[in-house]
Image (cartoon, rainbow, N blue to C red):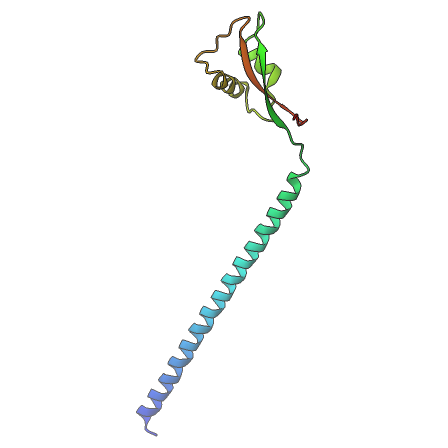
Length: 127
């Protein structure tokens, strides 16, 4: 065998080894990626099941509406103190905005003898 043929043969073998190594590295990266995706899917589905199981333990409340007659001295703020709770409303302003929306009000003025519909929450289910 001549020296040039030997060099060509050696370069060809090195090139083939390099290609084989690149394929092996690519295959390992793909397998690692698939493993990571599977772990994420199993972890998220497990947490979803746990989350769903925990929600059944919480107290369930139902939203109701009632009509009330405005008495002397009543304001939307005093009604919010009576009917709003911190679990369902972030602030009294939020409750007042809902009462105004339900009753199609444009201002916070209310008058003695008028009726308002106000929301409230209760743990009991009423049929």
